[in-house]
Length: 257
Image 1 (cartoon, rainbow, N blue to C red):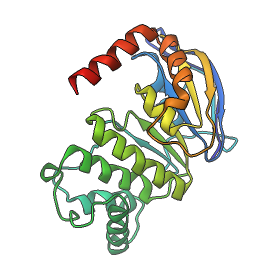
Image 2 (cartoon, rainbow, N blue to C red; image 1 turned 180 degrees about the horizontal axis):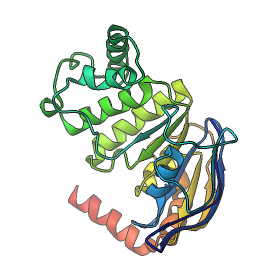
Image 3 (cartoon, rainbow, N blue to C red; image 1 turned 90 degrees about the vertical axis):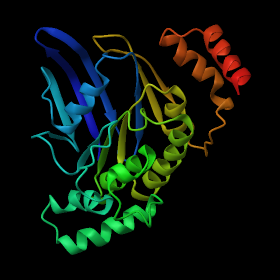
């Protein structure tokens, strides 16, 4: 699915949060949105999901104006939003049951997707019985089970520890490789953007405008991002984090380790 933002503006009670944003997100592309908190990144996701209407401009999906939310455009939040009274299997199957799929078929597919995210054996567990990382794995399975054409991710791993976050980034990459949706990712983690994205858009403070766009190579990427060190420094600089501060933080982490 191709997503097109055409001269998008958004205001809340007279406060402009997005200023004349235009970009095409090509079919099967993963674009990361990076910028200060409150600059309007999540609002862009909500507009793409059909949950918010722009104050100006038009949002298109495959060339057609959005008419509201649709299962083809799946929005996933930082919080897993699993229902605590349902098992992991029931939570994942619910995405299909909402579309009036046969309950037994939905449960069977839910088990298959839980296996894809390495949760086999935990199908009958409730959310409070598993770790935060496992809950987010289940949320990923729920997001992919209905085969959305576009996946809108709002800081999906932001609440997780660093090691779990990197593990789930690997899981997400594999799922995207298999399913091939268009992905729009909001993240504050520059390394996550470098690891996952085909393009990175760096936003200014509110109202959001694009300071710079970065295109990444399509060769296989690993969590060793040393080849992108210059790009990383530039992105951090655009965000107001100077290279000296970044080096000091890295040195501190190494000493503490």
